[in-house]
Length: 135
Image (cartoon, rainbow, N blue to C red; front, side):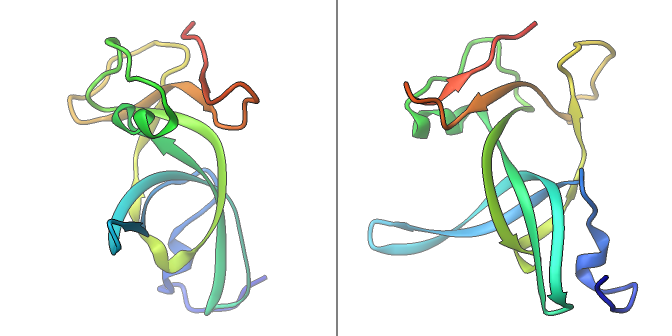
C-alpha cells in the first residue's frame, strides 16, 4: 500500500472515478496540450511520487472523425462514448474528477449539463473502429 498524507493528490482518485486528463500532442511541429476524459480502472505506485492510473478513454462524438467515424444525429451535446482504448497515465496528468452517468439502460432524466455515455467504441476491431448498437 502506498503511504502518504491524506491531502496527497493521488489519494483523491479511486477506481471507477471519471476524470479529466491533460496530455500533450504534436500538431504542425508544435506541442499542444489537450484535455481528455477517462475512467480509472486501477491505481498503482511504488511511492508517492510514482503513482500511475490505468484508464480507458471516453470520446466526445466530435472525436470520432479521428477514428474515421462520424458522429450520429442522435448523439447528444453532453454525450460521451466509452472505449476499450487503455492507457497508463501519471496521476499528475489528472485535472479533476468529473461526474459521468451510465445511460445504457436509458432510464431517468438527465440534468442539462450532465455528462453521460450509452454507447461503446471498439478501437481494436480488425475492420476498423466500430461503435456498439444502442439498445
